[in-house]
Image 1 (tube, rainbow, N blue to C red):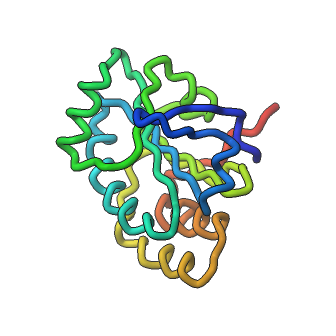
Image 2: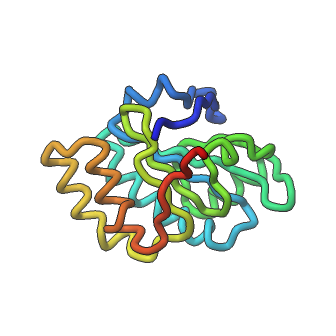
Image 3: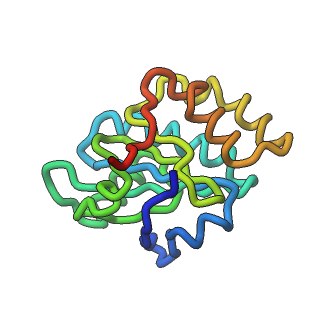
Length: 170
């Protein structure tokens, strides 16, 4: 399914939009809330994954959303710093982009392919994130495209039963 039309900007003013998807083999949007305990457990683990895929051009963007209360940029950055986060950050205290991607819980990861399609959606903190990384890295190293990467990383190898299909329009 095609990703919804979207246009975000990181805190460093770097664009994140549909047109930018074609510049990376895959883009992972990680929707999280500062006051989400599962998010805080997942961020350091996701940061390790991000580092391993950085040389392959896979883009990881963390999108800060609101869960019952607003947070300032400084509060979000302080929390992320404490979790050893060094990736790209988008602030979305209106939850506009989480709603656009049907991110109904935290954390939610959306894998977007170079084609502009939503390749996978995962809700929750993945228990086997690190143990499955090697298989996905091998697939990408051997020329697997973004759909293969998404399938290996999120469609069953990593996500297991936590994966749900992208919401279909009625």
